[in-house]
Length: 182
Image 1 (spheres, rainbow, N blue to C red):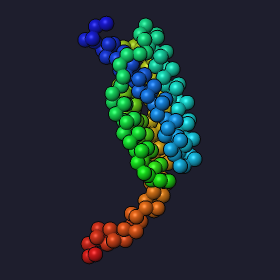
Image 2 (cartoon, rainbow, N blue to C red):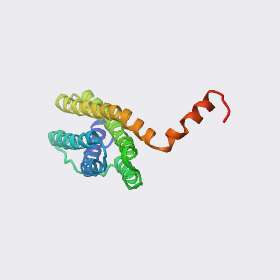
Image 3 (cartoon, rainbow, N blue to C red):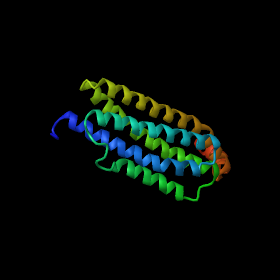
């Protein structure tokens, strides 16, 4: 394949995304197991099912192009997953662990939103309407997952804040911000 055209870039990015989705299929069960919030755990489990569908869509698109799904390992996702793994190994408890998990999950979602946005644009430009439709569907699902994580984070972050030493420090910080002396 000529590596100097948009189609070759498109195929390369699709393979990269396929690798990303495969890595997430392995990581999401660990995240679900570490979650303390039942709602967050269920969200990770639901997203695992969705991630499997995303991988299947990518296989379908690559097959229609006559291309294998396998190729290179997505180093970007590998790094994000490794960072998430580091969070799991921290001694975080309760809502603090959930806040860390949401942070890691949103990094994943933002990476995927950027990547799916790019390949969707390539598919549209090249007239690959069926692929563009599948990619748009996945892109919307990734955005919705990010929205759900943001909503969950509002309560979980507040709970993590109120259960930690930050809550004890709050009056002193407010006075300092207001110009008061400590």
